[in-house]
Image 1 (tube, rainbow, N blue to C red):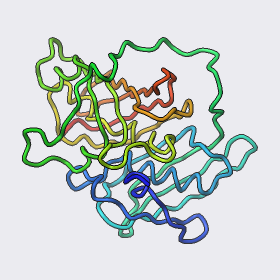
Image 2: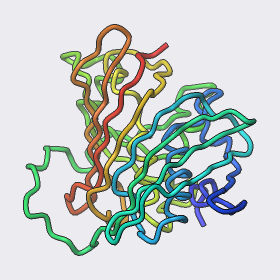
Image 3: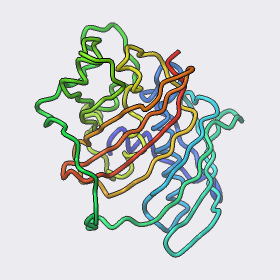
Length: 268
């Protein structure tokens, strides 16, 4: 079992009720990464559903989570033959942290798209720069070691403040950390973390400060094959202290496996 599998494990605590012990390795400063919390809440939703995949998930982040016990309540809103919809809430120390609506269904791993938008031009992984969080730094967020990140040459230059143009776009590859055991038991379980594991897209403009997510919606589009996921993250508007962020993920076969869009506050 990988560290991610252990860190997202849930324990039944009653009808529709679950607990999870949050792993300090997923902290960014004093707050847990939102994608990590989404993965735990997804696990609770799937435990309550007869369908194996979370195909549409919308999360509202009310307060940050810290290290310790997380309580998750999953309530079924509707059970259907093809789709089950649940409301899921996560709390800590008596305060509600995240609320979500999650729709579960079954995605055919052998499905072939009737249409898929053209695949973007992303260099191969061996042409990208591996992000080594401890290289030249005395301290880094623990979370930066939970995922392996590889950036395209263009993205690498942007993040180092050397880009020819200031464009809020990042591209490359992401996967569970090899130091934590590598690939997870279920590649689908990593998707909620993967769509929220990257630096905020405004980092391409020189801001590496914490950018809290207000709302994030993501869709699972296919069952990913094991291995690194290619990503393209971008913003359409950055204004008045707010920015949007869209992340698309493809597996090694070039299949679009997940899409996300979030609204967040600019780094502070």
